[in-house]
Image (tube, rainbow, N blue to C red):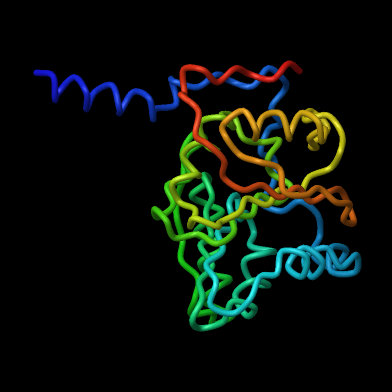
Length: 219
C-alpha cells in the first residue's frame, strides 16, 4: 500500500496540475511561422543563434515548437549525420507539413515528436540544446513544460529561448518575466543577449524545486 501511494504521489508531482498557470496573458498560436524566412535570413537570426550557442556536428538539438521548420532545416546540416534534430510541436498539422518539407530536402537526421502544452515529450537525457524560438509566449503551461523539459537535457544541456521584449499578448515576452518563470522551476540564467530581432536567453539546470512550491511570477 505504501509503495502504491508513493508511485501515485510521484505521478502527481510530475503532472501539469501540480504547477501554477502563468499570471499573465498567453498568446494564441496563429501561424506555423513567426515571420517570412527570407526576412529572417537577411537579419542573420538563425546563423547568429547557432553560432552563439556553439551548436556543432554530433549534437542533439530539440526545436521545440518547430512550426514550419525554419530552424529545423537550418540545424540539420550543422549537426550533421552523427547528430540529430528533434522537431517538436503540439499541432499535428504543422508536424505533418514539416515531415513533407524535411523529406523533400532529403534530411536524414530529423525526428518528430508530438508534444502537449504541459509536456514536450522528448527523450530522457538526450538533448544538448533545447531551442524555443519566438514561441515561449504561446506556451499555455510554461511551468509544467519547463519542469518536464529538465529530464530531457543532458547533464550539461541548455535551454535557449529567443523572443521579443514586449508583452505576451503582442507575441513577445518581457525579459524580466521570462527569467522569473524559467528560474521558478530550477533553471539558472547563463546569459541574455540581443539578437535581431529580440533577445536570446540561455539557461542551464539548477536544483529542481518541489513542484508544490512553484509560484507563478506576477504579471
